[in-house]
Length: 283
Image (cartoon, rainbow, N blue to C red; front, side):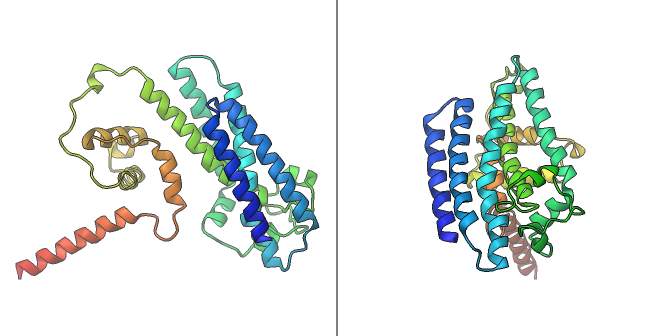
């Protein structure tokens, strides 16, 4: 089962990469991608409906890990298509407000499903036998109303929620990149034009992005009121570097295996080592 699903996923990702490379228009890209994912998901469903899981653990793994990977791509491209078709005509402020409203919708979904977000993000599994086994729905466990209209042979009570979490992660990056691109193209005030710094960032760019998000996570700048974009611009100016699509990089950092803060951990270790060396020299 696992090998068959991985082969389908690999084929799907190759098709989506091709569409992304060959299609510049986001609306056309979303439409084509949706069709490809839909066909791929149809093949997956045909396989699973006929397949007999070898154990409850295998069934849980499919509905918790594998199926959401496919469905999240479907939800993601549907969302982009809807966002692009509804995008208003107007200038910088109008479009930015529209994209920000879409981001607010993601936050609302997060707030409405906070308990399940925590369950999933922290790797809990004590309710997996209810969440990710077919026919085990419990109305007391925050069921979506549409669940009762889904195919019971290909759905559990909560695989949809994981699909939405994964899709919203990607959608957040898409929207934040859109806002960042708007800000980059917006006319700059004279006061914003400054001379280049003579300090260059020579470590990997991903390391600075770790630092960027760390600074934004603590109330260290403007009494905690500095926006992520403001901090990013300040770091770019200070170190003569373009951070590019740092929202996408942050998503990749979150998906790292093992430690997710390699640079920050290295900074801490280096500082502690320097202190230890200074203590030794002082003796």
